[in-house]
Each structure stands twice: as C-alpha cells, then as structure tokens.
Length: 369
Image 1: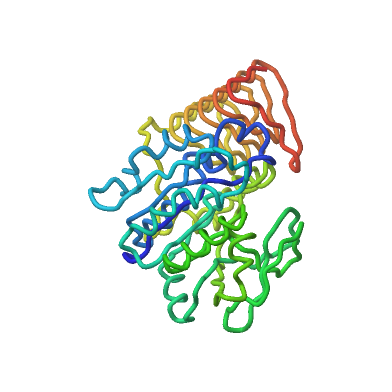
Image 2: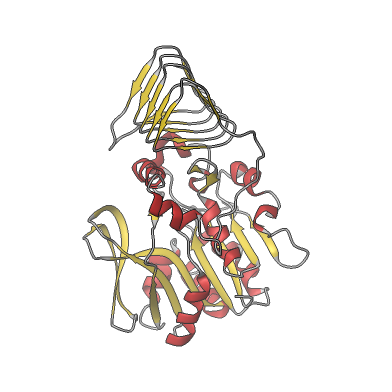
C-alpha cells in the first residue's frame, strides 16, 4: 500500500443528526465510550500500510482539528508523507453543494504525490478492514475503479446508492433510491483508482457543473470505466442520522461486534490518547451490559448504556439504554432512559427523562434539567 495515497472525506450531511452535529462534523461525534467516528477511516488506512493521508476538512472543523492534531496517535506525524489537512474550498461565486467542489480545490494533493493510486473514503462509516485486500482485488480484476460495498441483511430506509454486479464482481448497474431490500448491495463510499483516473473524473465532472463525486462523477462514467466492486463481509454502520448513531453505539454492546471492531491485534482502532484514572465503582453501583470509560464514578445503576469519560452517576440514579458523553452528571435519584446526552449535561436530583428507542431524546451540550 506504499503506492496508495489516502483521502478522507469529512463531508457527510448532518441534517438528520439534529443537535448532535449542529456545531461539529458528523465524523467528530464521540463513539463507543472513547473514540470518534473518524478514527475508523484513519486507523483502517494506517493499518493497511497507507502512510500519506489527506483529510478534507468540513465546515465545522474545530472538533476534528482538536482531536487529530498532528496525527501522532495514528502514526501520521512524519517527516515524509504523513497527514495533510485539505481545507474546504472558498465559497466565491460557486454556490454548488456536495463534496466535488472541495475535492476539485485540493486535487493537486493527489496529483503531486508520488503515489500510483488514490483511495478516497467517506469517514462517516464504522468498520474495520484491510485495504490491502481491496488493492489486490483491484489489480487482479484489471479494474479502472474498485468500490467497496456491503450486502445488507435487512430492509433499510433512507437515501442509498446500491449496485448490481456480475459473478466476477464487475458493476453492471448503479442506482440511487430512498430505500433498499434485504440482499441489496449498498455502496460504502470508498473508491480505489489510479491517480490519473481520479483526476480525470473530478476535473471533467466539476467543470461540467457536477456536485457529488459518486452521483455526478462515477455514476456518469460507468460506460467508459471498468468498475468493479469488493464486498466487505464484516460489520458496517453509517452514521448519517440520530437513529443510526444511537444504534451503532448500542451495537458495540454485542461482544461479537465489539471484538470485530476493536479486538483485532493486527488492525487496532487508534484514537487520541487521554490518560485518566480507572472507573470507580462504589458499593451501591450496579452495572449490566454497558461500556464505561475511564474517569467515571458510578454509584447508581447503569444498564445497556455507553458511558464516556468523566461521567458521574449518583446513588439511586438509573441510566438505561442511553449514551452519556464526556463529563455528564446524573445526580441522586435521577433516571434517564433512551437518552443521548451531549457533553457536560447535568440531570439534577430525582429528575426523570425518557425517550423511545426509535427516537432517542437528545440533551444538548451544557444543558441542565
């Protein structure tokens, strides 16, 4: 993978994440107790041997910059290659939306590299993969473009790009729909191709008024490019809505999914290191099927929940089926269920707050109730 330059796209729409992504990029959302969503894309690349990575910054970039900094925690703070921040394009007179404008503005990052291939990925996906296998497939198939896909095990709603392939993996059709059926092949917004092919698609599409790399770029070049698809058979979650974020975090309570994502010794998921004291479980604590990060103090009951660093759960308090981000405080006698609490939220004594599993209640950062 030394011949591959990576580009990580942080342009996922935040419309369906409501308050959670109002002032932060989707990829900066805290995940699974101590990680951020962007950690997976960066870790997958460095674990696969890609040592030159460009990070396409979103409009709200402070949380991303604070989390990643020099890239040291992903072994990307290097004298040669390493991490490069790719700023968003200046608005100017171009009011087009979509990711293509920002890719076009930073196209020289790929073209001026000494790499043969580009791996372009959307960082709003949670999965653990070795991209070396994708490169091997690409070469063996003689593909111009190789895209990653997942065969879904159940019907899914929402805007989705799905594909059809022949028995060799060659893509025969690409379609956009508002939902897919069980067994459909859903694109994971990860694409491998030679640098000249990438530059040609981006430049020709943007200069003809295109907005989206996949829809306006790849989909409109299917007749002139040999496009193949590589199936990722492991766990995948796309963080593009509040419900998806809630479910993906709760999925990590499944030991099999947790093991696949985080316990592979050859493909660890790296994150920003924060040294804190271990969790303190007091005599009155009762914990069941939960992830609890360092720095927490637990005196009450926690069940089926994700608890981030520095959270306090008071005596007699109950936290059930919820996600509590950093430094939240659930005081004595309080009860929360099906709740997503952003950072520094305080639930005062004896307060009860409840959402529903299909529509969890969100408490915004620094709120007090």
